[in-house]
Length: 205
Image 1 (cartoon, rainbow, N blue to C red):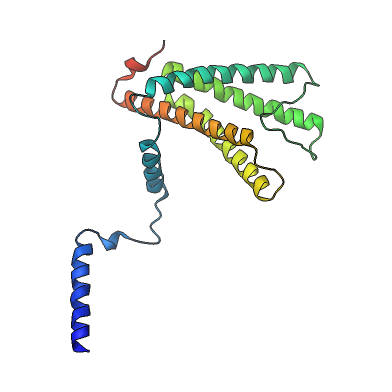
Image 2: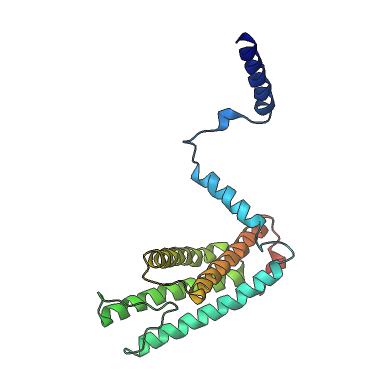
């Protein structure tokens, strides 16, 4: 019995030396959430496998420019149609049915939402043209909220069996998230360039 305990204690000491030299167990805690620190770690992990790299940035930048102009133009056209034609059919990128709201209430909500969305798109274009990360923030905020709601609603409908998994809808959601990541990439590059006074290489006008 003594020999077994002696061997076990020696094994524990040996393992303790091996692992304690490499790890600091005092840093581990089940209460040390640090949301901002975890968010920074998640962002660095995503950026390590993202398209936000030096060699790919010109492609990312011009794709963001073109899609931003298209998005602003499309939203402006849609807002003008809803504003000028009271009975204009409300087109949505994912078809929905509203049984609670009346048509006129739905139209007012659509006008309000389209106006907010159009302002966000215009500010995104302005931020890209003038290298202003702050001007890009409203679009990022609005889009993050919309995408979060869209993913939640779509996942809920799929889980509850109300909606079958549609490849087109899934691809549309993924592409929106991908474009959102590209805009965040451009914004982060702008912030670094402004901090280092190197924004001259990013100017369009």
